Image 1 (cartoon, helix red, strand yellow):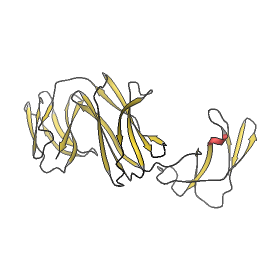
Image 2 (tube, helix red, strand yellow):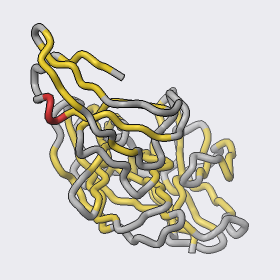
Image 3 (cartoon, one colour):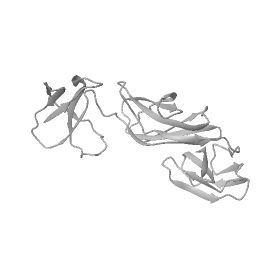
Image 4 (cartoon, rainbow, N blue to C red):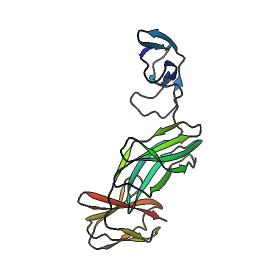
Length: 240
């Protein structure tokens, strides 16, 4: 196998050829084997070569490339009264360090907002955090997932449009059997969704105070969403 390489921002020593058994176009979930390569000058760049003895999937990446020992299943955010609630679900954590939620006002320049230590249970885990100082307008977030050796990767970027509207509250919260949604006047409908986005409860709003029966829900974190005129707010609910 030969590939022509024209360096601009990295050197030829930063690039390697990797091989694994996953299908092309799929999301990499297992580490790939780095191949032994040779390089030679070619016109304005280099040729990177390796010997191939069997059919497989090959790709090019930084020579320190590795799959992070964690799988990100979801990352979402929504308004929670005067804050922005951020939730994510992962699985298969192994020797993982931590997560950092990074924030931006323009979707380009990000800075650290909050940090959460990995639990490393090896199973499926849910995490949540809150941005207590959202900016007016669009707020952009991404999740930085940091491995124990310092390597990291990013989630997709999500956005939450924050504009202050009427105060809505949940009482009690945490709750076991029922919860009252106060300040619902002006909204069209209310629903309760789980961490994966599945709708568990939905009803039309008829009163300023609406009661939701939640005794049948599993223990965990939910979002109570109220919508009107295409706009939606969310409040975090803990079912205990």
